[in-house]
Length: 153
Image (cartoon, rainbow, N blue to C red; front, side, top):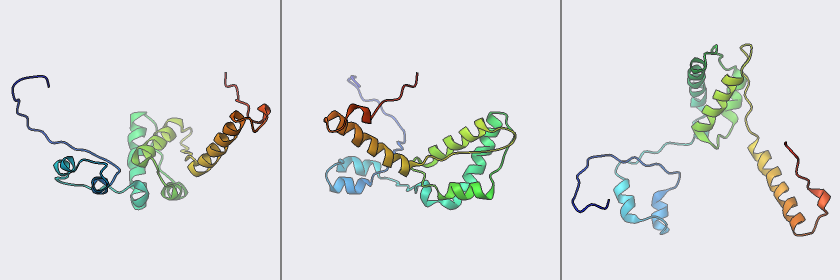
């Protein structure tokens, strides 16, 4: 950039997106010329929620990895824990699985592995309700004592 002579390079560019770029091009939200430059070898990776049969294998691999990394005894998952992991929707995909398993290994005591999955649908429900209460309070429709911030200090 900023030079006055051409510099040749040889590289491969790998890009990832959760969007359907062909649909984005058709809707006029993505440049068609760039789409054809990038779309040489498309690779589709399904979200983790569509690969539930692979979750126990991935969990086992990452549990061994984190147990070694943090010098903890390897603790395998029970059948019930595997079922819980397979039923979860994994909005954060593999990153979320890795984070939950790393946290479980770090917090494990006495060879007991426990993990807590976020209650995302429930959290969204209450988050929206809290936002609605705060909005009404600001609009003067609710008394001040309705929503009180909690002091965490």
